[in-house]
Amino acid sequence: MLNLKSFIDYVESQNPHEPEFLQAVTEVVEDLIPYINEHHPEYADLKILERLVEPERVVSFRVAWLDDNNKVQVNKGYRVQMNSAIGPYKGGLRFSPTVNLSILKFLAFEQVFKNALTSLPIGGGKGGSNFDPKGKSDNEIMRFCQAFMTELYRHIGSETDVPAGDIGVGGREIGYLFGQYKRIQNNFTGVLTGKGVHWGGSYIRPEATGYGLLYFVQNIFENNCDSLEGKVITISGAGNVAFYAAEKALLFGAKVVTLSNSTGTIYDQDGFSREKLTHIAKLGRNLADYVEKYPAATFHPRQKPWQFACDIALPCATQNELDEDDATTLVQNGCICVAEGANMPSTAEAIKVFHDAKIAFAPGKAANAGGVAVSGLEMSQNSIGQQWSTSKVDDRLKNIMNNIYKTCLRYGKESDGYINYLKGANLGGFIKVAEAMKAQGVL
Ligand code: NDP
Ligand code: 2IT
Image 1 (cartoon, helix red, strand yellow):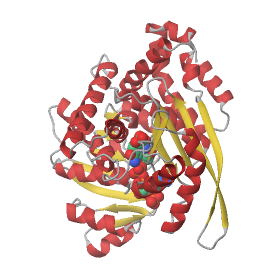
Image 2 (image 1 turned 45 degrees about the vertical axis):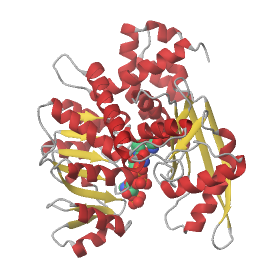
Image 3 (image 1 turned 180 degrees about the horizontal axis):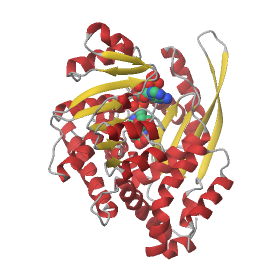
Image 4 (image 1 turned 90 degrees about the vertical axis):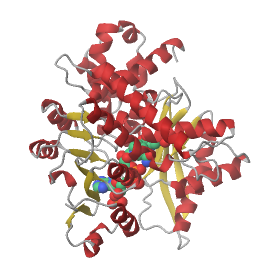
């Protein structure tokens, strides 16, 4: 029999000073351990959980590069290859000064369950660097990406490990990384996803995480005989995920009233239109300037969006951006659904508030799986040397999100009818990985 507290103590002793990793593991094993004890005691004998929390491989390397003043700069580079039971390692690269091993291990761990939920044959990984892209010139970004790939290339491959974007890594960075990989290896292969659509990329990949999030939320409301029409939505972040989530929310007839970044939050009580979103995209990180063109809106320096009343909250910026106080405010203001576009944006205490209030809470590993799902579709297109149309990819994305929703229902419905999507996602993802590990023997 597995014991929850002993297991968490064990993970902490093996991974000291890694709070985010411990948080992600705790969030999962709280659901898994009772399930394993009741239904699959053989997983305990096979030490499936002990194996799941130990990355198959962690690569840590030096990235030295020259800035625009010809000064040498040195950063840390990593790739965490967490689990390859159901396919090659797959997951993004994050470039941010906040990157450390605890954060990358939590992201890689989450990715294992998320990728399994997509039903595509992809294992879990994550990587990145403590490099800060803010304020860097385009040439500096290129030289950094080239230096990063000069070491990373030997650890990845289209059948081994396929990185993609995450915070601070978008289409431009994937281009520079891919160019360097191709130059070193002299081969044009689907080793990265998120490529440009004219050189191996998939249609809909940039939009996929945000669109997929809204497809998941649509399922939640339809399951309650409701729709997104007229619903007020607050979104945090103003990057890839937040932006396309806002775009799709508009298409569903909802009213999006906030976007944010580390400088602060725009609150537009009239809701964003397509035109307003295009204007925000042009502002770059200077969100404060929005009110110059739209004076009915307000800008709230260094504040998060959770103080504003909404029906639906979509945290799409970063981990632990929504705490217990934010969750309490959201619930008090009438919020009935929180769906995570970011990875682990809600703290454990915040999730407890949502569950206690019995509002719908969709965890990132289910709700934001659309991005990696379309990455998986990009891998398929690359391996058969074809490119699918926008509508074909979008249909597949919808189908995958609908199936993830069904998986969450199947494993997450509680005796009182409340749907615990977190439990559903944890169990649904785990079972596939555990069965594959069991079949492949002790590795
Ligand atoms: P981007 O780099 O495109 O955008 C990140 C946005 O979040 C920026 O607006 C950034 O603001 C804001 N942000 C980041 N950190 C903070 C912070 N500490 N406080 C306030 N705002 C912050 O990243 P993505 O949109 O790609 O990623 C956002 C989240 O979604 C991450 O958690 C990522 O792991 C997750 N995700 C991404 C996927 C993808 O396909 N890209 C797929 C699934 C999940 P600023 O510029 O001021 O830092
Ligand atoms: O967190 C994530 O799922 C991503 N950053 C996307 C990973 C991918 O391989 O597309």
